[in-house]
Length: 197
Image 1 (cartoon, rainbow, N blue to C red):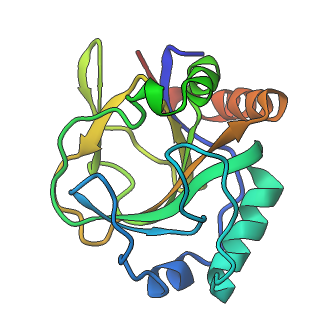
Image 2: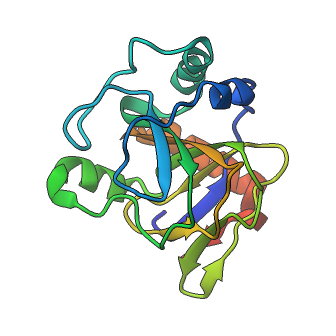
């Protein structure tokens, strides 16, 4: 479904968002200067399979349990807390295929596959997506905290400094069958919110 750029997800709400934010330290560097980040997976070569850190807090351990139970990953690559500290520029998240050509191809074949959990922040107006019709400002419904976005094909950014915005950024090897079930279920429920190419 490469033409699907962004979609709210029919997934249960995560109940420990405030605790994840309270545990945020922002000490782990990111290559995106507009963000502070805290990686919850082990550091390794870019886009390599990884494991959860062994020093997770209680709330981070709850997040691990949630992701293991609800997201369609056969292997995780990168799970982190993102917190914007300035307005970002339009960008695509995964643009260097040579860093892991096999994983890049896997992402392309399963787009959209960037799972995001909004821990805190506005449900519309903070995020901008550029498609063939111009700038889109997606809206996250009240009954979910999750959305999905394309990793290899979707230009997006934060529209302004968002001091209250905290996001869980999830990247992994997709289980296509489970992934497609989530996408199709979510399209049925949230088709009016979807952003297409």
